[in-house]
Image 1 (cartoon, rainbow, N blue to C red):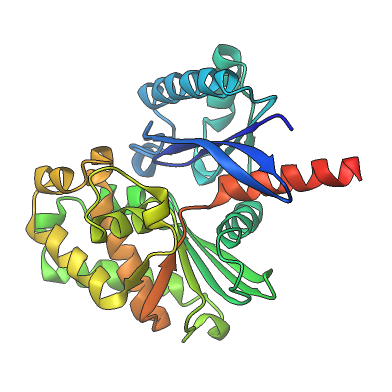
Image 2: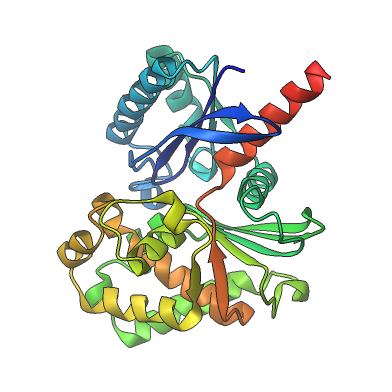
Length: 311
């Protein structure tokens, strides 16, 4: 069966997966992450900046070439909250299509949650129920699931890029009082979560760049390795230590600590802060990190439909 390419375009990063079916499952042939930072300045202007759109076009042009070299017969590109929030999203999407030939499908919050859960669970066959937390650049997605099916999902408009540009600018120099104000604002949003989310044990999965970067840091990786990251455990105390470490360091310090993804240095402190507050609010002591996410969920859907078509 010919390979499939999936591109997940978020507020901060754009992720590529080229996959191929193998038996009843599928495997990754190639994965790549770049940081076009579509959401840079979005919190203030409510628009995707021209320079950000150009970065995305360069990224997608590169991804298309890689996909073609690997023999992908189909390329699917999806966009998440940044396209739902930006007033000029339609214009940007049209420009991208004209210059790259790639059509971007904008997912709803519920579709985003469903694909993220489906992708994450491909790597955790033993987990039947629990909570999925996906900290993105523009939002944080929560999914409550039982028997591997969604029971409830909620999208909170607080993400690593948004928080880095608003509440936690100059994180190193921010006052304790300001930290408390940001915490109260986050918990006000989290209070919308039903009580079933609270006190989950053993079935909490975190996906997204913040969680995978922290897992790679824990493993002391100099080059990102999905096999070392996928399934890694993070604890609430460990995440809080990273919050304090990032608050004490400079952006240059953080950049040096993540040689596998230095471009994430400006948003990682904010994403880590959000993850720490998730743990506090939901009384989570430990969680599992999934390297897989939305793009894997879309690939799974595509390969499943192909198999059913043959049957």
